[in-house]
Each structure stands twice: as C-alpha cells, then as structure tokens.
Length: 364
Image (cartoon, rainbow, N blue to C red; front, side):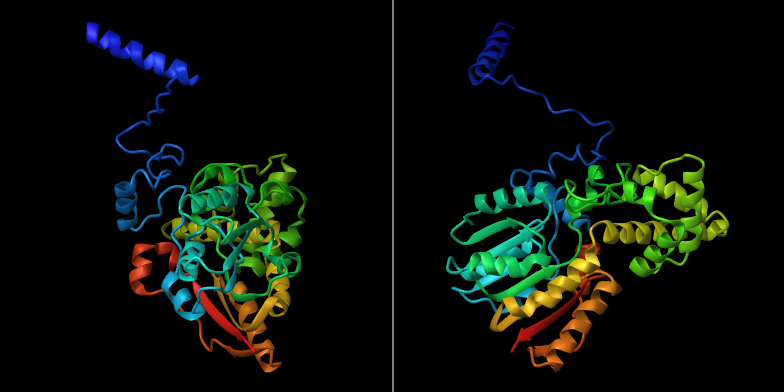
C-alpha cells in the first residue's frame, strides 16, 4: 500500500513538473471501438503497426488513413529518375507522393498540391517525419486547377505529374466532414471546409429542376426526379436537410414505392450517387478538372509523363477526350489506348480501388 502511494505521488509530481496532468483515454463501449474517434490505434499507424496490418488484411481502411491505389502501375509508367521535377496534383494522404519521392533518391523535387487545409498539414508533417523535408518536397495549399500559377511562381516545369481524383479515405470516414451516408454528421462535403458553401446550404438554394439536372449529370441517378421532389416537399414543410442522416431519410422516403425486397439496395446505391453528385457540385469538380486538363500541357517539359486516376465515368470521359484531342493536335506523342485497372488482388485488399481507372499521356 505504501509503495502504491509512493508511485502515485511520483506520477503526480511528474505530471505537475511537465505542467500537464495525465489524461486517461476515453473508453469506448463494448469490446471493439466503433466510432471514428474511438479508433485511437488506427489513428497512430507508426505506434500500432500490428493493428493497422490486421485492419488492412481484413479488406478495410484504417480510420484516419488512406491506402493509395495502383502505386506500382503508376511508378512503372512514370519512370521517375533522380533529379527530375514532379507534381502530385492531389497530395491527399501522401502515399503516392512518398513512393515517387523514394524514386528520386534524394535528388530532384516534388510539389504536392491540396485544397484540404486539415489533411494536407497532417500529410506534410507525416512526410517530414519520414525524412522528406522542404529540400525535396514542397506542399502547397492550392487547387490543381491553378497548375499554371504553380509553374509560374516556382519557375519550374514538370517531368512527371500525377492526379488522383478520388476523395481520400480519411475524409470519407470522418463523420465531421459529411462525405458518407453511413454515419451521422453535418452534410458538408467540401474538400476545403473553410471555403464555399456546404451541401446543406446548397440544398436550401437549389431549385427542384436544377437538382434533377445535378443528380443526372453528376451521377446518372435514375430516381433524380423523385428525390428532387422529396427535397422540395421537405423544404415546403419547413424541414431542413442539415445532416447526412437527413439526406438519407429523404432518399428513403423518395424511394418508398420500390418493392420491399429491392429497397435496401436501391437506397444504398442512390445514397452513394446523391452524395457523389452533391460533392462534385459544391467543389466544382468538373470545372476544376476542365481547367487542369486545359492548362496541363503548358507546365510539362518535353517527354514528361502524366498519369490520372478517375473514379466515375464523368471524370474518365473528360480525361479520355482531352488526351485524344491533344494527341491529334500533336501536343501529346502518345496516350493510353485503354484504361488500366487495379489488379484483382489489390481490389481484395482495398475494395475502394474497384472503380479506379488510370489513363496516361506523354508530352511531345
């Protein structure tokens, strides 16, 4: 008893000396953590490598992480050499960036762009801790639609460029960002939550006709008219759509006439499509991609290689059309004839890779 009191006293003194009393981790209910915040081990991959490996082995993505897709296929195509200058147009979690940095072998430079101030700061710190400092990596809080400004401000043109157009898993899984219908949270969907209007605000102002067009154009939603009409009914009754659960409830109500045996799957698919359509809208994703593709050739050195990952048909069509038109114009010497898909093994390890399509181009 006396020893326990001494130990307790010692711990208290240690905490007092540091000026920060020890805080116990908040316990979760049950035997396993369920919410995003409770998964404290998954948020610390360096400290809990075994836990991370188990989660990935089960085909899941650890909370707060992102598993980069088609890394080897990208490296095989880009053929990065020490001394080259590269651009990761969509930094995200930094998995692709790290793999490309390793290929530079300490010589050259990569510029990483991202509009998300929350995650890009974490990624910069993470990569710095892995030995990639500002001598070889520059992280800029900038939209990849502004690649011409990046090139002008840095005085550099690029030997290789990667653009991964998917939303990162750490954004999808964090309920505070509102990217997923699976967990309740504010209906935000902005890649940069400090700029623009949220999806909830957008639904307050969009007309029923505009909403139908948005759902059809951005995600080919077959129940666009029914969902838009239900949104209008909610607004007329003074009911706002503020959360991810609110929007899911709207979709369930709109699809009330779907046969019972088919409804769960129909609601799931419509939720996925509607969240995608709203995300594309509030982030002006098609407009950003148009600008990026138009400006891309002028920031490339001769022989530069470009790889782009897309995750839905609308994006892929834009990339395919741009590459082919510019090849015919002599801007690109070669472009991919067909899309490159992730392997079956990768899709088993990472189910979020299934919809990925990769296209590439080589500057003349």
